[in-house]
Image (cartoon, rainbow, N blue to C red; front, side, top):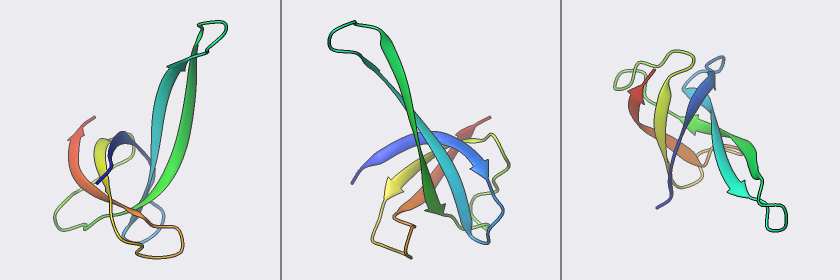
Length: 79
């Protein structure tokens, strides 16, 4: 199972958190660090995890839960 760490950027929909995951890689020719980000729609249980905007969370790949949700919030890491 794939596990990623990211930041919560939206909590507008019920039981869904939008998490932004950033990664950095070196350009093969110029060796400059390039920052790329991707947003994931993640399922979470409000009873187990109390999330607010800008929280650092760990997400894990899971079975398809809806058209866009393929990840689930595992735990809250911090602010």
